[in-house]
Length: 385
Ligand SMILES: *Cc1c(COP(=O)(O)O)cnc(C)c1O
Image (cartoon, rainbow, N blue to C red):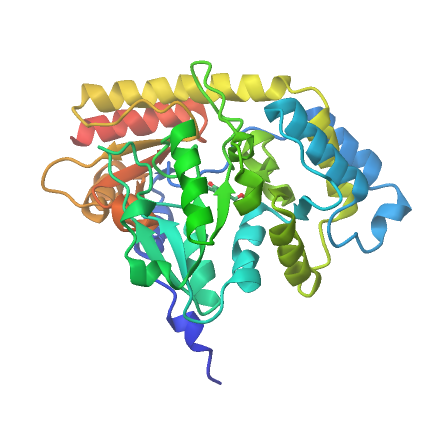
């Protein structure tokens, strides 16, 4: 049998070699600590789990869910947007339930991108912004991101011939992997740019709730005119420790919400309704767990930054997200430094180039490892340098 060329066109999986080495080491009984993936290590708050336990016993929840999301879930999402950001969205036409934001990212291409069309993608970003395009026959233009520019993706340098064939632009702040945050002025420029070039602007706000030192990330929908050109993706994964539950929502421009919903209604049948009920409890129930989670990550952030600075590695102190973005020492690439740390310290860090061309020269260290293991990993890295 012959697979489609879109499979062969996907970029090589940059963690393949790391995974192979990790498994070989583990087979020899070596204790490998992974700081590679961003997946919360603390459990989903009890009140959310309790809501799920109740919801799963309701036979009405056992049938096919509503395609666009239960009315009560879309209303809860709209209410959360209002409480959290002061943003008004119409739950009937401007909110769509997603089976995780990754699902929405992958499917939005089918709604907007014809073969050969471009998508403007952050130079370092969540890999599906690029691979979702490849799978749908589109192409990516990587917008440069540099430390001098605060890792704000430079859409203004996109060549006219690319813009002529561009349909969408992804942005994501607070940013994975760089942990950069955006200014209001930057969002305003992005909105004007999307309007000028007739692009759908998709703002992936996966880390809106994870902020430090009092920082609280905004929604791009707070900005004037945003709803004319943009949708925003909110995920319960990182905010409420619900990565395994697969639940998120898109909010914003009604035409884009409808187009994405149309694609989805032909592919999946929505989010399990009991999970939507648990998500309602997460969005509208007590929010104390978020403060506790931010305090936990902030403590770990300080530990990582402190150690990196003591061993002479450059990293800015992030205001948000669950990652520290560190520059590799002179003479290394992302890959060779990640390899050295794995070979000599038995610690996995993510090579920055796995997130796009602007990630070269950096590694990403995730804060989702229990404190004692994180301390042990940092001690080992320190001893190898
Ligand atoms: C974790 C992450 C996601 C995935 O979120 P899900 O809702 O779990 O699919 C999306 N975007 C970014 C930037 C992320 O870091």
